[in-house]
Length: 599
Image 1 (tube, rainbow, N blue to C red):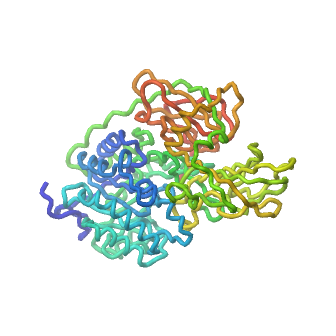
Image 2 (cartoon, rainbow, N blue to C red):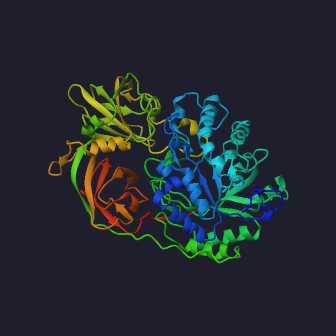
Image 3 (tube, rainbow, N blue to C red):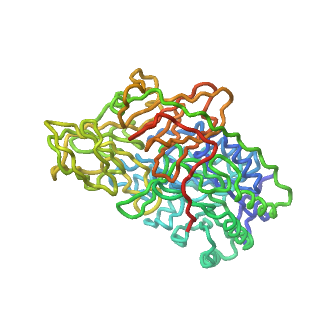
């Protein structure tokens, strides 16, 4: 088509090339879906009657170390956007820099927190300099993919729900200018939930709203501030996310369809968040701040009770939406793409183990420090610190007594005396008694970053590891040896090829790494992994981090995508904190735990 005029918001309905366009959008995040499945998920979305893809851009994955950028493989954003274009989808791009999204630190890289004065999401120079550098790299990739240049991007979102944070009046202006000054020419929008409405906008951008149930006063508010302009629900929440130790949230399909119908009858545009949630692979889950000191980490699955399930299955919601959206199309919708096959593989038996202590030789050189140092400020990764995973702090003690964390453990520490497990310190438990013993002993605290909070007012306080002093009998502990267990792919590879593994005939010690082989005769199929006789840890399949498991639930299975498997033997390594029954089971159905209706 001849491209003259892009998306405009100058009348009650959006126009594209001066013709009315109702945006029927759906969110699918490329970083939550294995690249070989991008096309499958987008085709299924298109077949539902969706005409626009929305996606965030996770800064923390694209710039893992300051000045080191990654837009390849599963992070090839340009390929994802071109794929959307080839399938006939428009795109609304939400480049942040902050994305929320139940994602680690809302997508902000943890190295920003090395600066003790850092003020995230403000015009603090340390933050804006970093944003400018990231946007220099990101936007030169997406500028050519704008609508007026022949690409699929019809709009850009400025930041994300800033109204709920709003601490700096100049910040939204800075973010808008950061886009415009780098060649962004398409329509700009902002989006806010009820708690931020009216405080997160910026002149020159259309305000949109996020919700699950219609509240007439919030729609009226849009009419008042933007009379005779299009109204859009940028995030219509099709379900909800889950936290560990909670229940699995569901939102009834009929209720969801009813609200979507109501929105469409009001002549509004809509984006279904999420259309397909996918998975928080690796250590990328965020956390919810429930007020100090308790934060709850988000689970690995991001199924979200969305219309397309975590593994790409159609649901009742999908079919109800398809019926609804078909009424807004003049042409018949595409046929439904076929589903991926799944298989419940035979259990994989653990045949080797390696203790945490024996694995330390494969980590970076330990760091000696008089005082505890938080993860982000460790001298690692070209002085970017440690971002994710676990950190082991060791020191010498001469007696037992009361160990007190002073609430300086972020987020959860397994405590050891001479490598023997003695207890847990976390947000709830700040002290317990260490057993007495003879002479000098080694105290170890293995601290897990369970996922940095992604929403709320405490983003600046998300440093992990030990963030202050630990007391033993009211005396401050000093002289630590600190090991970083970030569990990056190169570490997992070194571990796998080591000859230090012990046979299961020898009693394993915990925490430890456990190895199994998953054999496949034919081409791999999707499956779900079940770790019934285990407690808590992380799973690696052929070097890929599937994410965390924890028997407290709600989630009891981990999604294993077929593209990450291959014919023959697949290497499975489990890092387990406390116990194992020696086998890994597989099933064709996910188990997300006991359900609760979204309130």
